[in-house]
Length: 263
Image (cartoon, rainbow, N blue to C red; front, side, top):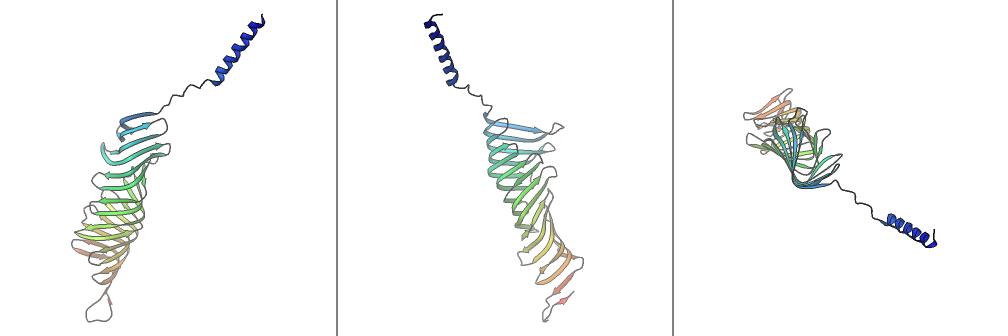
């Protein structure tokens, strides 16, 4: 083999090696999918719809997703039971978060506003920070919100404040926590209720049905009614007035008498 042939072969090998070293790698094909008018649906074991997500725009991949202008609907007995609307929805392995201006409607019983809400899909629970809740006869603010989708039970914690209406009378209410179902609102722990007329009540539990026909105070009830102090095991407020039950003590401030008398 001539010297010229050997030099040519060496040169070819050098050029081929340089091409392999400096050649750009083939771009990895992304699995990300962007689309408009997105609709996702989840089903229960029996085939009935469990939830649906509708969004104007967004992107999805195997793990994460981001959707814009979102409506998340939870179904019960085939009907839309809870509808959550938000500006954005992000989804990862931990669950689903809706953020922006969040509005939640639960049938005709409850509406809620907050800034962020988290859907814990493993435990079937909705969670949020500070919330404002509107019910037919109540308006409530709380530091934290949780809704068990399976039990259809709403729990409010971190301080509850609001207004409650019964028989056209408005009460200011405060408590440590609260629970709400489709037919009842219950305030729990260190409950304080004040009427427009200045009547004040304290108890450990307040129950009000959605019709607003009555309010029940339970557990170490005490307060002032028509300028008279009282205590009782339970109290009911309705259109007929006030009813006291169980170990009732009333201190009547009678006219022309200097000291109160127990009754």
